[in-house]
Length: 497
Image 1 (cartoon, rainbow, N blue to C red):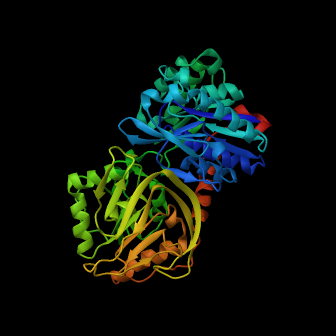
Image 2: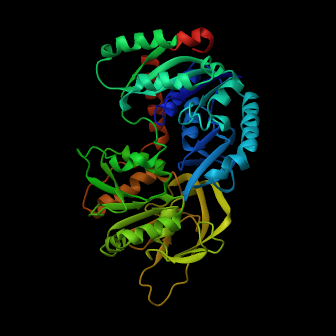
Image 3: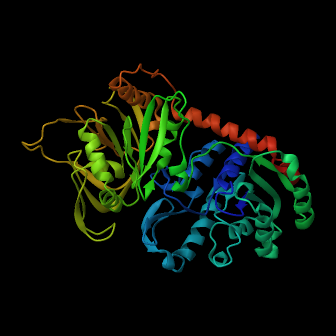
């Protein structure tokens, strides 16, 4: 199996962007291509058809390559859960939680075995692999236990591209410093440099590029201009600064930025809606008066619930709901909306029982058996009979509590699966376990139209395609940007492209 590796001088240099673009370009040329990332640390996960978890970025890259995501594309996934610990996912299955200091001692040998095994299995079906590195390949304190960058590149003898983010400043120093810290055998694999996220006149870079090529003896393949976000973000750090254009957007949705927010890729389809404005609200911020509030998934539901209470945002959410505001909780957010969360085994810390926001009549009990599976169901609300698909990733099981005499409201199943979601009779409090729910265009528009009707607005068309079609257009646009701005034939000749 032929191999291309994309590494970066820093995190957020554009490795995922370039990997996805190359996957789409090479698939266009007729190659049977697969993405690969040996080890990923992310809270945005996707569930494959076999029920395995991988990083969401690798799922997007698989779609770019025109293939079905599978666990071999990301054999090791680390999901941070606070206190310097992470849940370890190997070949799609959770195998435990480990402290950062103990991870490599416990899992390095097994991890490298899984990386090699996965690459071998992929080689049986694909002609070419496009690998993504992680962070920087030149972290000298980590290189001896690298499972993602140059160890993989050397194993595959991969044509390697080094990408640098010029937006951060100091890009030439980043490139030279990275190359200087690589071993000669590693540096020999670097066949091209890509300058990413450039704003301004490219002519101003000419002298710098000439110097860089002369100094490093490695060609600069091109300069990619700054692009509006074309791929889902892997890191939640930029969410609080991310705001949609307010112009001509008449629905205002607020998403709670939980400290350990996960699967915020759920909301990309909402950001793509021309009538919807998205605002991420920090737990110390004022909630305000949005048209609806969404509580997203969380890697550690109990800790995030306690953080909401400590900052007073929990009370704001309750007051907002009691005043008739609309709230939707997804996965961990669904659990937070309930009456009780019980952790008898201490999976999230100390064993105990915790009071939720009390807005839905459910009790959630955590257990060691994690649920990860794709789902296809039909909706009961806000419209009957709409096909909806997505995926579940959660540790807890939720049950509906018996109705007491104090209960004044009835609750209904959102889907034809009774355990997947619940809504109150006035359709102001919603909760479900289904990630990817907004990918379903007709259901998304139906839910948005429910909000619009409450506010006296006209309805939007509901017979629209699912978000997958929009994602396909975005991947083609991404590939076009890469093709237009990079001279890939400099290193690939006619072998690949």
